[in-house]
Image (cartoon, one colour):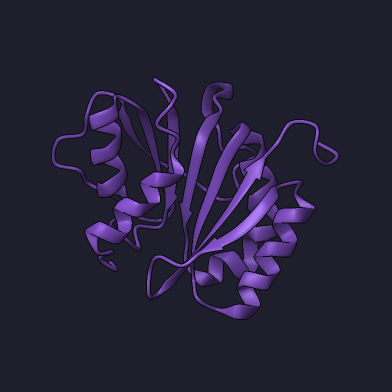
Length: 169
């Protein structure tokens, strides 16, 4: 597991708007980083809901707060949101091979799981070819305001918004 420096990982929480009282946040992870710890602490402090969906790995938190759920997930599942819930923020950390082979199928499913005006944040290992492809696939899946944030040495953080009335979905 790649340990993200706490100060840098905490900067990702700036993507979460502090102006709304109760928010749902989803983390989809292959267990390759410790981002789940940062998001858990943040959501516990704010009283937000956190759903951690693990892809091919297990994550253990010593004392998860009552609004935190850790569940397994398959990327080939027909949808990613349980009980038709939608999330204000979705963070995704997957291996480069998973992005290369499954991005075209994963991004539209994430679009259905994020609320209007919600933010999608993808942590992707720096690889110019994959990043260009992800940018194009995000636009194809009707995300807007696609941007890159350079917080980490090993990763690019690709952010995108879902806005009502944009695109064909």
